View: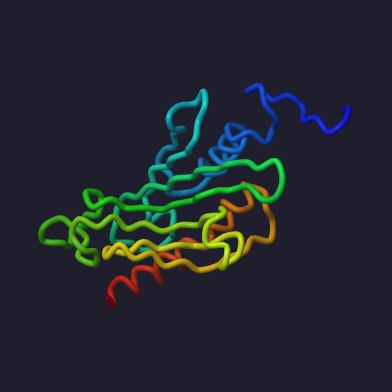
Length: 179
């Protein structure tokens, strides 16, 4: 290959295009238990986001009060330095239903609250390092904790986040219950 050129990929760009990365992440997610389906937003031609419908109990391999959740992945490849990304897990209020709750809602969460937490690597919160995990509380407060990844390959980062998700969600829910 001549010079520093990248080989041409199917979508007309380099293998490091957003579309190529989201396709790799989609392939990885499809192998995960608890992923009902995935879809590209706004579509497969020029996706900006990968969304997955999640059955939390299967994905987390533990009993969990919410029957449904969503995993949202946005990835922005950078020509130099580390890519920017957001891997966000959330449960919408209308999804938080359990058979044990009298009104069909998860009694551990405030009414109307969307539980949301996830990993981000961007130019914000640089005092925490390049990446952070953030939790969004019903009061509007956001807590962030610095994290680091030993590898910057998108599939490796996603796998690391999925492995850490059960502990992160358990800790987050415990903090929610003490407020």
